[in-house]
Length: 260
Length: 67
Image (cartoon, rainbow over all chains, first blue to last red; front, side):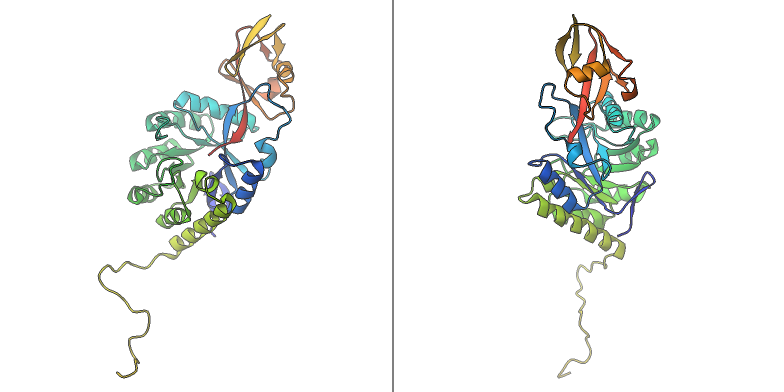
């Protein structure tokens, strides 16, 4: 498959995956290996003071030397909280500056608060971060985020964790057509066909977590998603046939039929 | 006696201490963590010099699974 380039770095996989909601770190690792993903999102949270200091950590299961970490701001509802979280992430990961910005509007819908997202993106880009930004499927906001200097724009397909698939393919198409930076569908993918459709629309990549972690067999679904993203990308590059709404077209020769 | 607010919880220590000493006190030595004091990052290279004093607010974070 052709390579994905984000902020000048090349990736062979166009599937980005989250690391939340798995049963344990062994399942996390197995699913991520099956997905073929090279970029994995992580959350930044307070340490549990007083907890067993020897319990395994995510960094042991997914060594940062083997994966590109994408620390997120999940759970942040203001620009300030998101900025603080990503500054902590950069310190935590030895200056790593590729980050996923998301500023949410409310805990029921987890819909992005685009006003706060724009504010945070301005500050973070000026502060030297390479910002991959979660946003709504509003083409105007998506373009503004690109203009601010975000290295990838990541519109939702539907609500985070909903598995409802791509609700507005036409908005995604407008965003894909207008932006130069990679457009990555983030959130809402439910099953393999959703990922394939996103890629057929021309998205540069797909980011998902719950569709894999919440599947009956997460490792098998991770493998399915890998294939769906590859199939969708190849179909997009191949260029689909034109739809003929009212006129069929035979696949076999019309000449040489017996009895003619 | 000083009181620090660490990850939102008040904790008492006999005297002011460096961030490096605090990290040891909290059983976090050698762990991959990041520390913020009163809203500002304390870089790892400064943990030996930076002091935590009475009333300071500290956030100590790790990476966890997330989407």
